[in-house]
Image (tube, rainbow, N blue to C red):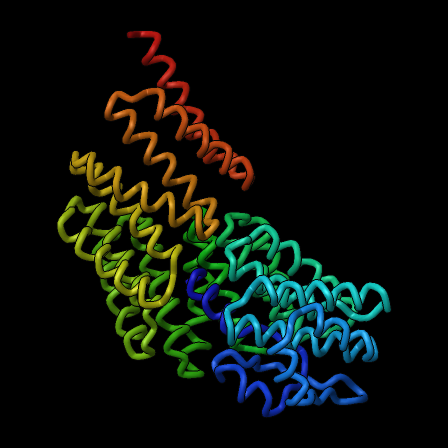
Length: 410
């Protein structure tokens, strides 16, 4: 689900300028933010001919013309051009230049910077630079709190919760979602409340707090059922499947995953279908039915690829490697784990990358390559430490200690 939200964020950037029909012409409708606004009291209406001109000339030439405008108009045009470059032309570097220019203008004239920080965070997120995205979105949150801008604040907290989760900073993710949950209840926004309950449930499940999941998720299911939100229901049933998997009630886990899968199919959610197949693969791995596990991981990769989820493909490859390792097929295991390492590094999924490095260490140890095993274990420890996951650090430290004992015996 978290990676699924990542894709939603990339396609629903919050651009706070009123672009009228201009963006309908220049940017695919999917990418137009739901929260376009007007700068009170004077509505910003961009000139189409100007935008066409600015797209065709260099950044320096555009900058010269922008300098002739009033500061707020300069910022509005800069963000609009950043949006066009990002969405229409996939030119992230040029989009960043326009964001940086807008930020410099806002700093110089003491104007609001929340929307600029949000858009900058979205650009960093698109490039999988999650630490920078987290930094920008935290700055945006401070701005929106100061301005008491509820809509932008809730969007930003959701963005932070998702991005911090994917990066592996679970404490920051939990903090963001708890604040968002309080805001949703304060504003009596049931849909937001249900979604946030689910997001917190995923983190609780990751930490083994299954009782918290079982206690809170029924409320989310009640709201999603009331509002006929199939996507929300699919997510919740998938999470209940995760709870049953953790508790080793594999029969019930399979039932929940199959129910979730049907809901995902009804909404044409490729990522959700990938996630269900991935989890079914994990169930059959635990049951030691390895051929069936491999079949489901293959299906997961197919759907993750369709949804454009690099991280999803990465974690599926990681589990592929683990299954091959358990079967004793070390050559296939290393190939899959190396692919996982590359993809998870690319998507900056530090927590999953650390897991993969542990698995590679185990693999090398099984091949009696102690030197390589130590290197992978140490890399894993560094990643876990950077995420302040001390429990995981201690587990890998024990592997190193056991390895040292083994070497001394030999």
